[in-house]
Image (tube, rainbow, N blue to C red; front, side, top):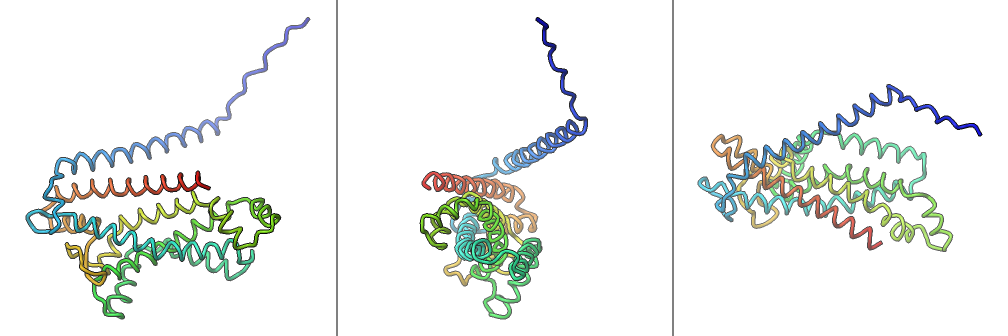
Length: 283
């Protein structure tokens, strides 16, 4: 009986090896840059965290960031409350109701993608001209909130539309076959299936809101206090950091604020990811 010879070893394509190496190197460099940035912020800011930075009233002696934290949470929640329902509703229309190949839909998508790439300072100037000058509101939390809601609306709409379009058509056909209408199919089948992608867009929107400065300087202002109403002026944590650095006397406090901002962003992202996981399990 003849002994079978083992198959020859498969030669690796040099191009595949090169691309795999470049991909791994890019991933390692990205992770290294992220870890270095986090470590540097913690190293410069964590030793300067102290109770005086969390007093309710800001003074030149304590440079408290607590009013900025409260304003950041307020503006973030209000902006999401305004932009997310409109963005999701627009995405549902584009993905589920508008006919494919519709020129109007193509124009809306092109407009949304264009608005997503506009620098934030342009939105700030738009909000300043509309809310501060035309409506004569001045610097207000409401004006900053509306400006940020307009800014993140294209992002929420496009990510939600892509998440809805990624749901297989077999899900819709199965729902229609059981006698469900289009509206019930969208809210009972399509939206729950696309929930992780939708929440990913919301997380990106939260990150953009929390780290925004240019649009808020022109609209919400830089007052270091928690306003009594939405028509008052107030600064967010990112604007607070910018103000401390620009004054040139509070570098240590600014790095401490950077640590809190980092923790706030990570916490919001973790909370959103947990909510998405629980929502997906519930469905």
